[in-house]
Length: 273
Image 1 (cartoon, rainbow, N blue to C red):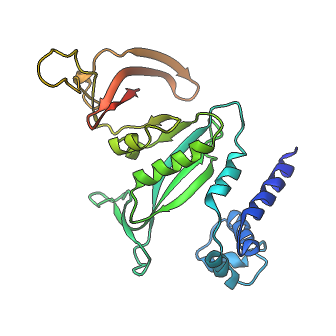
Image 2 (cartoon, rainbow, N blue to C red; image 1 turned 180 degrees about the vertical axis):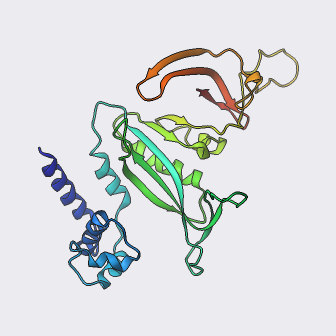
């Protein structure tokens, strides 16, 4: 089957999954994908691929309710079998400072380039989990992209999305996460999910090694020596060390320590690279 035939089959399946307003919604999606930049939602109705009146833009969004989980299953059908799928999750903010009547505006973290400015904005947060098909490049397939409500946290939403995706995959994936998820709540909520997790840790994190053997007096220790990521004097000899040469970055030195854990979740053992 050619790439064009695969795309056509995918579009037909996606169209059948849409509910009310599917024709206008499908045209709207084509307009979004082919428009380089727009300053307002109404501009999308000017796209030659949007074959309806401008008011249909709003009506399609108001009347439609795309089945996110069924569409996710359709996306997962595009993943090649025989290789470990690579997933990536992240939390981003959509700043809406002037939209005072917007439902459920929340305080969101947003990096600010101005020195001394607080990295906070008002708006809505979104959690996204994607499939990364290539080792190089920026192309990715979003599997779930959902708003984080005021009753949820980014950690809870990310854990739920990871669980929903992994339950539908045929093979055990590798999940990549930023430092926001290198914390005890995320490790606890994802402990029983069938996936490998590679999570970046903040440089000021403090980990602990395995405790010494029980001395027979008092309560058994849960934690061993401190391992401060930003203090090399607290590092002991790595359990594994490896040097590899990368075409882009040159010689890379990798060090691995086993049996490290966060203080709040001693049962969740980490391997820190």
